[in-house]
Every structure is written in C-alpha cells, then in structure tokens.
Image: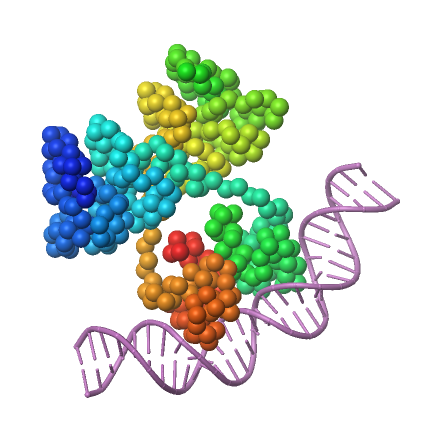
Length: 209
Length: 209
DNA sequence: AGGACTATCCCCAGAACTGGGGATTTGGGG
DNA sequence: CCCCAAATCCCCAGTTCTGGGGATAGTCCT
C-alpha cells in the first residue's frame, strides 16, 4: 500500500503541533508540510511542485481564509483533495467550502481516531463530514413548496427555467402564445413576482425545478 | 435512554427478513413494521397514527418508489426521518431522495454494524451516507467557471439573478441604465444566451452566483 | 344545477428588453 | 508611448414582455 502524502494549514501553533504529532505517529501517512497561513501553503506548491494527496485546512486564518486557499490550491492542482478541519459550524462556511472544492468537512471536536479514519475515507473516494455538517448538507436539498402552482403552470415555469421565451415555451407545449401568457400571469400572481428572470430566480433558488 | 422506533420498506422478502433480524437483536431499537411496498407503509401511518422515529427505505419497489413514498410520508409526518437503503448508486437517485427529504443514504453493501451505527447517527442529528454517496453530494457543490466574465459583469449577472430589472440593477450599482445595457450585451455574448431568463437559468444552474 | 378551478384562446397599450451602432475615459502591458 | 480591455454613457429600431380586459370548454365538488 502506497503512502498518503498530507499537508496541513492551521494558524494556532499548539493545535498545529498537536495535529502534526497525531499524523506523524500514524503508519501509511507522510506529512509534507504544516503551514501557519494559506499564503505559505500556496507558495510551497506552485504548479511545478507535485502537491500532497490531501490537505487538512483550517478556515479561520490570518490573511487568506482556508476557503480562498482551497480555491487557489485546487485551481493550480485540480486533483488535490482538501479536507476542512475547523470550529466553524454554519451554513455559510460549509457551503462556501464545498463550492471551493473541499472534499470533506470535519469539526475540530473530532477525536484523533475519527480524524485518521476520515483521512483514509477521503483517500478511498469518500467525503467524510462531521454529523452536524452532513445534516446541513442533506437539509440544503430539501424542497418545500408553499406555492400552489398547477401541474401545467409548473411546466410553464420549468420552460422559463430552461431559458425559453413565450414563443418557444408555446411551441414546446403545443399551445398558443396567448395561453402561455395567461399561465404566466397566474404564475406571477401566485409567486408574487413581475418578470421572467424574477420567477426563474425564485424557482431555481428554491429548487422547485 | 429512550427506545428508537423504526419501520422499514423493502420488497425483497429475504432482505427484509434479514434486516428485521438485525434490528430485532439490537438493544435500544424497536421495530414497528416491515413493509413490502410503499403503499403499505403509507397506509399504516395516516396522520392520526404516530409514525416511527425513523424509516429505512428501499428505492426500487413495485408501485410507488421509495422516493415517492418518502415524499408522501414526510408530507403527512414532517418530522419523520427517512434513511435510504438501496443498491442504487447514481446521482438521479441520490439527489431525488435528498430533495424528497431523506436524511441519509446507505448502499446495501453496508455491513450490519455500520448500518446500526448509521441509525444511531441519524437519531443524533447526523446524516449518514455511504462514502461514494457522500462524494456525489459534495461534488455537486463544486463550481467550475469556464466563462470569463469581468468582476463588473458578474455583479450585473448577480443582480439579474436577484430578479432585478435593468432599471433596478442600474440603481443598485449606481450606474446608468445604458451601462447596464452595455454590460448585459457583453454577458449575453460570452454566455451565448439571448435573454435575461436564459442568463439567470445558466448562472443559477451552474452555481455561479 | 351551480360554483370554483383549470386550461385554452384573443385583443390592446405601455413598458421592458435586445441587438446594432458609436463614444469617452482609465489603467495596464508590451 | 501606444494599444487594448474594461467601464461608462448615448441613440435607435424592432421584438418581447407585462398587466389589464374578456371568452369558452371541461372537471370536480357540493
């Protein structure tokens, strides 16, 4: 079994040393670098330098945040896996991290044994997350429709969300443009919007389509 | 510690019996029902009947799918937790399940020990997922921008995605409507679209905003 | 049988948008 | 120093959308 190369970014020296100790005494891992700032990490792995397999990343850092650092590291090394390790337990941090390309998200309350297990899980193609984080993620998919659009109106709205004009929606649904117009007037009233882009925005942001 | 009430839906009799056996011999759990179809499960828990704390749900079922069953059960009992347990390892099944309100997603290859652990994790406010499933979920958040919108153009696009008209966007950004018009023409050219709703749809579906 | 809702179609007028021009200023990069 | 991209502004003509009417037919519920 091949060695897993790891780096970490953590500004608190005590925690950083603690993590170093945990990782060093584990077989199968090799620590490539423990950086106090995102800038240090980015500077250490320009495009010519082969990066580690996995980064452990704090979020709250002086200078570039762990999220920005993740985005930049992955821009230069698209195959790099980044596992967030932070105290931050809020939607903003979680979703920004995932959008930046993080492969997992652990809270700092994670015990060492679970941390090591998560590292292996990430290597094996998983996405380890602390339970409360995973719940935030699954909850973000939930759809709750308070609106009362009829099936036909939902079809019309879906057409708008596919970028269709009145005329195109009419062709797609085999009805006249007048009928599309009628439906859209009803949709606007129910959603309390006044334009196509407002309706599309509301529909897509709420995952109605 | 209070007992966790569980029901399950699984059409294959052998598997269903196997799951029953696993759950029955575990302390802290009580099995409220093992149903072969979604319709049976829905019929067993009309709104007057207190539902279990957790449902284990297969997806591939005769009649109503596990996803439809989940949607219906949670419509009647909004606080019900549903944990998918299926062979299906594809984006469609995973995201449809989560949108229907599933709290977790396990593959049938999950060993009994891990299944029992996942049940406890779901009860404790987590969202247990098999590693490959979790990876699908985190990967769905990733953003890759191939477009080359300038910062200002991105601001304009963001305004459109908030439902703004030309005039409103102009007010918000302290520029004239003519300038908004100019920017939008450039945005349309770069994104290869020809209307606001098409641009908004493209931006939101790709998570650019 | 009547009422409510849905889906279908039409007209019209004003507002908003789209795409084509062109113009100026500013700040970098070669 | 010159060129170019970016941001700002303007005009115009044609198209599309928005919101206000109204109409007919079918379904479902009472």
